[in-house]
Amino acid sequence: MNIKALLIDDDYKACANLKILLAENCPEIEIIGEAYYLKDAVEIIESSKPELIFLDMQMQNEMGFDLFSLTDLSKCKVIIVSAFEDFALKAFQFSAIDYILKPINLQNLKKAVAKANKELTENNTTNTLKDLLGSLTHNSDNTSFQKIGIPTVFGSTFIEINNVIRCEAERNYTKIFLKDGHFIMSSKNLSEIQSLF
View 1 (cartoon, helix red, strand yellow):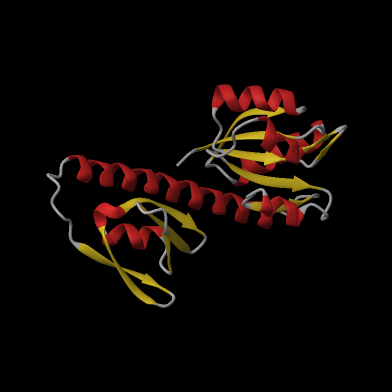
View 2 (cartoon, helix red, strand yellow):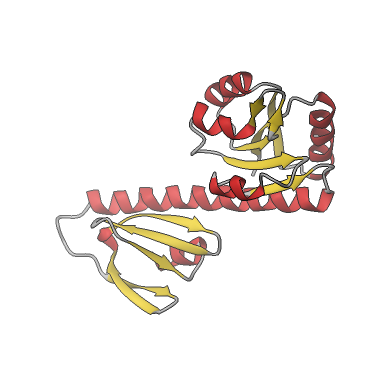
């Protein structure tokens, strides 16, 4: 699976270095653009819809975190690439999937890309599952679907398939959202949950 990626860093040399590392070691990454200012990054995000963003934290008078308030990043994954450790905790509060310190360690970069690849693949699986559930619901004549057992850390919880709205990957767990507004946290990963349906 090719991953469309955007590099955001005001340091041209750092951007060029990351580009080389990705080209030589992460063939699944397709770089669709580079931005040296957040304004330019927003334009590329909204026009080209990247799946993955490599985001520097301190860029002249701008902070990388400001990007989250400037555009919708819910459809893409963000890897923070910074020379400073100070922003690591905040990065995860903003749902960044990884935090790489400069100078970039190749193994850390590969792990971050592998994590992004996994999460993007699982998200695609989630969308497929949502489509399947939607199809089942539309094709039903108000008949009750069978119940399935969802493994949780406390045992198993039984739910009707037509009460499931969506499933989301949460690291090695899966959040299963129900029509009544509640969710179940399953101890199984998304692909294992998919096999139950």
